[in-house]
Image 1 (cartoon, rainbow, N blue to C red):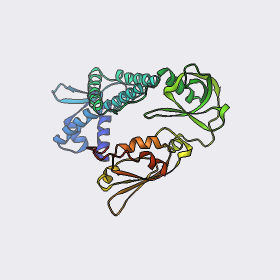
Image 2: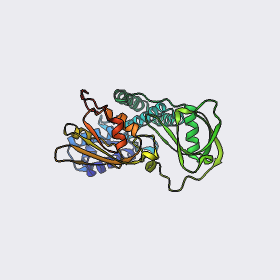
Image 3: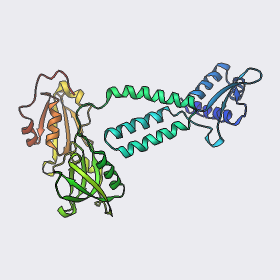
Image 4: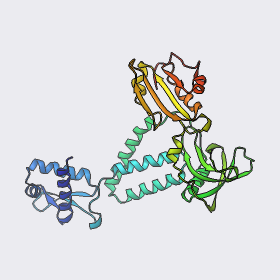
Length: 327
């Protein structure tokens, strides 16, 4: 839709809202200097884009379009997309055991639905369910480590402060630790990024599935100076970080896999270049050789590790030629 057509539609909505009896096709034609057929298309667009449009007949049996409800709420864009987005976000939060976020999103969705007319609420819920059913067919496959909802709720509360936390980590009977949470890294395995003051100033990673209990303390702390979770996460290929492994990574994808590899973002700061032979060279800096090896295995013998030597040795002898498809 062009800006001119959008402006005309908004103007039509204002007319339909301000006129007590609504507006007819003849009046629309006169107001906008358009044909009867174009006026019909504009009323169709009005019904498609606004949730509180009613169509009535006047004493002369002419159809009139009116936007009803109190003045501050007259212009109500259709809410199907918003309801879908909230439902998707709520389901994702439940999948990650972020129950507090899931409940908040569901409350917001329900509040939005209650503001709609019964007809539009039913339509919006049906449309959202249809989309969500289709999206379920492309849900992220593969295993994942379950996180305890009672732990993730405490983590979110502590990050909001930020407040210190007391956790039991590792073994169930381990001594409690007091940590200062800086963020969460979500992946195949998810990690809490936190500082444990009694073990130095460096940030440490705690696997969420190994945190058996957590308590948010009423004690705030300063976030490490210059800390950025995005920058911190970029130091690793996945979620696991090992400063001793951090360095330049160079992979060469064979010509038959180059176009497929070019569709991937292996790292947010990567660079890629084609060679004269049609192969693709990908470079980035990160740690986490084991997670890299897990990923590289999927490419069979269509990828070669040029650097570092440690990663090259880790994958040597594991490249298969018989995988029927690339990732």
